Structure formats: C-alpha cells, structure tokens
Length: 265
Image 1: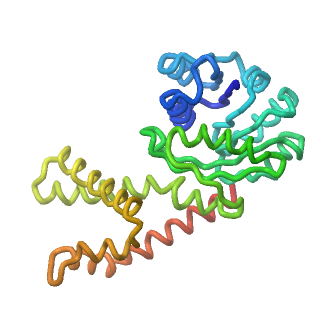
Image 2: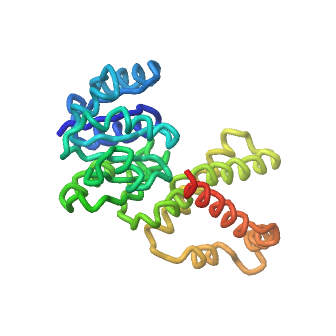
C-alpha cells in the first residue's frame, strides 16, 4: 500500500514517524510533497521517504492520500489533484472545519472514499488523540485500515461527523490550553524560587501523571480531585481560588470560542 502526503509539516511528520516507528509501513512505501523546500528536505533527511516533484505526482501514486495542509489551502489542493486520483484511493483530510460534503464537492466526486480526521500535536511523541469520521462510500474494512495508521501515533476514535468541531475544541486545539496551564504553574514556581527548568519539569510531570490517573483508574476527575483535597489543607485553598477566578467557566468559554471558529472554517 502506497501512502502519500500532500503537506509535510508537523502533523504529517508525526504521522509518518508513528507509522514507521510502529512498523505499519516502510519508508519506501511513503511518498510526499510540500511547497516548502525546507520541509521536503527535513522529511527526506529524517525518514528517507520518496519526495515527489509536485502534488499531482503524490495523488497519482497513492493508495491512501493524506491531505495534511491548512484549511485555507485545502480547496486549492483539491482542485489541483481531483483529476489525478484513482477512484479507489482513500483520501484522509486533517483540515479542521472542512466537512466530508465540502471535500467531496472540492474533489469533484460525491462517491470519493474520504476520511476526515483531527489529530493533535502530541502525536509528535506518539501520544496523539485523533477523532475520525468517514464518508458512506468508505467500507468498514477500509476505515479500519486507516485507523491502524492513525493509531500508530496515539489514540484514534470514530465519532459522528457532527462532533468533529467538538473534537477540535477538546483535543485538536487543547494542547495549547494545557501548555498555557503548565507555563503559568511554572511561572509561579519560579516566583517562589524554583529554577526555571526544574519548574517546567515539575509542572509538566504533574499534568502527565494526572492525565494517566484519569485514563488508567477510570475514576471521575472530581473524585480524583477530592482525593488530593485534604480537609483544611493547601490544595482546597488553591481550588477555592481557581473557582473564585472562574477557572472552569474560562476553559468552557475558550473551548466554545474554538468550536464556533471551527464551524466557520
């Protein structure tokens, strides 16, 4: 199976790296192109995949074709390649906000085998979270073959397309919220006298460990929070301040803004 990538940025790099590291394909089976010579050179050096001369060459040779470009470029790319793919080629788009219907129209064929997904940047360390939905023309077996690729760099779950904008808010964009949280915690640790590098390590490890507790224990986050909040202790005072400052509401409002923006892309 030949796997192609139009766009060789961070997400494409993460996906290629995951597939090769997990052994779900080999470098000689991957072909890609990017308008940036730097991006092409970086991927060639790192993975030794075949670099095409243009997008059309990638489309012509791919059994599974990843459209790994920004949403604003997806329509132009689709117009360029729509007459250069086999009918059985599976197209996987990672463009936020671009629906299956939009993609089918852009590619000039409502029967195209299109899979829409939203990965996130932790895929770079094989801890990604990807929401996936597929057009009716995609068979169960075809979808499963793409899920194998997507699961090579983290978790991938099938969702209804109507939930894809929510996926953008809760996982696609959320690493930025978490990084902001880590930075803020580290800043206060520095203010309290801790060296900067050590503050980042403590803050990041606390987030990593807390996330694993949620996933591995199956306990409700509120229950896990209560386990840390001893009566009359330090933690409950911190939680009180966060509640007074509207911590939860701020996160929910931020996600709402993210989701609504995704709907308009």
